[in-house]
Structure formats: structure tokens, C-alpha cells
Length: 101
Image (cartoon, rainbow, N blue to C red; front, side, top):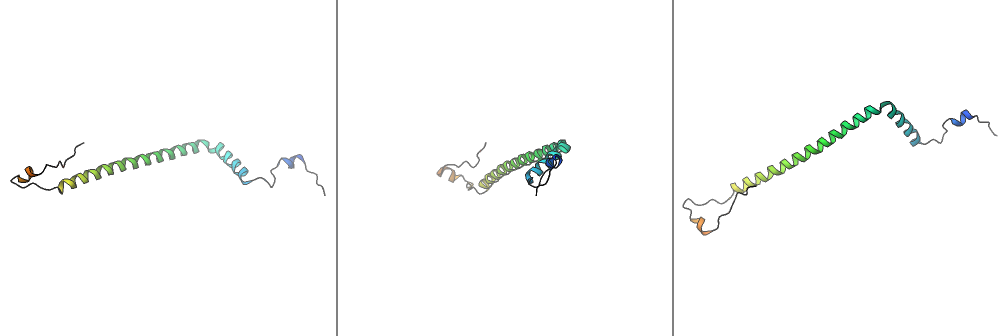
């Protein structure tokens, strides 16, 4: 049982066309129609991601700096106090509670 096939039928996609072939054709068609809008959208998304990462880094550094400052304040607040007559100052070396930058 042979069937005559015309050239027109041979040019049509057959049943063995894969999913990826169909997807690439659809994406290509979409890019031709909406290419500029997709490029602008991708650019905006990239800017938002970069800004979020930068903001997170700045906030992290600021939190670390604030934590160090609080630790310094805590060291100063819990440091041993000298007696009013100053007798302990001569018996042991003086600790420098402040470490400036």
C-alpha cells in the first residue's frame, strides 16, 4: 500500500517534530514580536537584583560596625572602677578600655 505524497505534504511538519523544536520556534516568534519589551524587562530585573545585593551588603556592614560599637560600650560599662583615693592605680598597670580607630 503505497501512497503518493505531494511536495506540499512533505514541507509540512510531521509527527516526529520534537518539543524543543516547537519551543524554539515559539520563542523565536515571541522575540521577533516582543524583543524590545523583553530586553527592557530583563534590564529592569538585573538592576533590581544588583540594587538588592548592594543594599544587603551595606546593611550587613553597618550591622557589624554597630555590633562592634556596642561591644566597646559594654566593655567600658563593665570595666573595673578605680577607688576614689587612686590606690589601685599604682599597684597594677592601667588598662586602656578605649581603642580608637
